[in-house]
Image 1 (cartoon, rainbow, N blue to C red):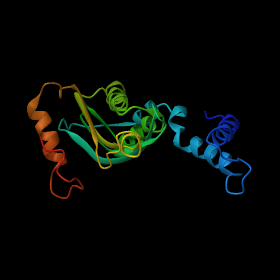
Image 2 (cartoon, rainbow, N blue to C red):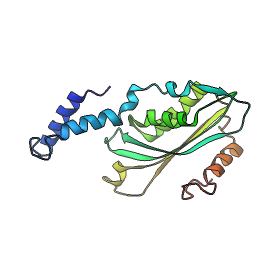
Image 3 (cartoon, rainbow, N blue to C red):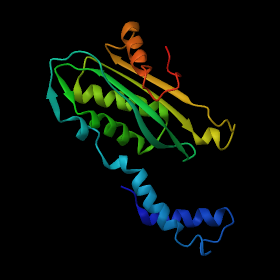
Image 4 (cartoon, rainbow, N blue to C red):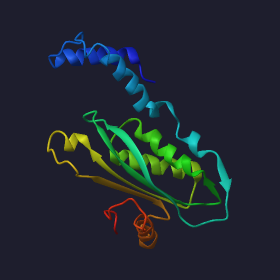
Length: 196
């Protein structure tokens, strides 16, 4: 849980550290605003992802389920700057499925923490494997990192892609190809960057 009092004090110190006056008219309420903001964007620490994956429904379907274009916003733990993009979550049911919104909520739980994209991708896959016990999981996350586009190397528009495969997807080129084909079907908001 976010300690808003500590965040307010830290923001005041930061403002002083960069040469600003925390009592200046435009900044007086900034520590409060940032403390409330951190309570919202770091809410993933207060949620167990299993909560979203425990209510399941029986199914005879054993074909791939894909929820694509799940928009997320997260914060890089190295510079505490945003990274944002889309997650694509696929799994092969093993007698049960979960509501589609629950996959998006699982992504949200892990995104709303200080993160690195590589770990977040693995955490999503691991949670689904543990809670749903599917035959396999494949996750693809593509994101733009402001710590790379706004500062440092300053390459706006560059994106990082991470992929994790578990179970039946591991080493199975046919299943992986099907995943990428489904991502690139007409009507997708994608620009083709996921082509296999």
